[in-house]
Length: 81
Length: 81
Image (tube, rainbow over all chains, first blue to last red; front, side, top):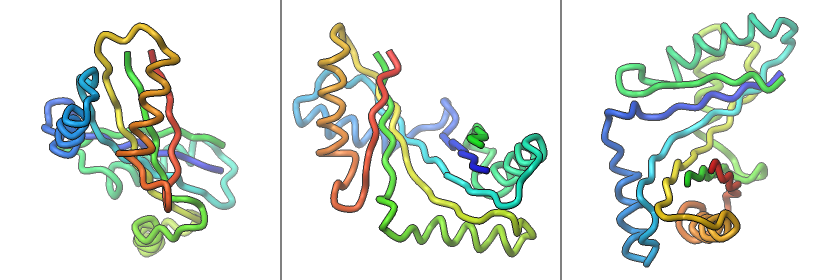
């Protein structure tokens, strides 16, 4: 089974990487780019997984405890099967 | 208009961050996690965009020139409207 976890900064948290890219693009003439925000994702392959609900629960726990910092980031889990 | 660009290492390129996470998870008892690969994505907001095909072309160019390193990374553009 495969899962994907998306991790992104909370909307209230400044994203300096995204802001830098936006500024660079404006300097290159892409003046129509209004905003850039960067996030990351994790493609996870799970072995011997039969129960989708159980996998979902496990990946949610991993996302919360390991992959994201819940103080400043939010995450979303997708089970791709 | 909004677009999302996914950037990930080519399958043939080693992903040390993903490997480290996998090892850490195994150490925490998640022995069913067979593989982890990390990627990044960019949420882009485009102003005054009417023509979807033109936006697609522009974002493809930005992805190729700025957001990804085509030597070791591959990218995928999604126009979210």
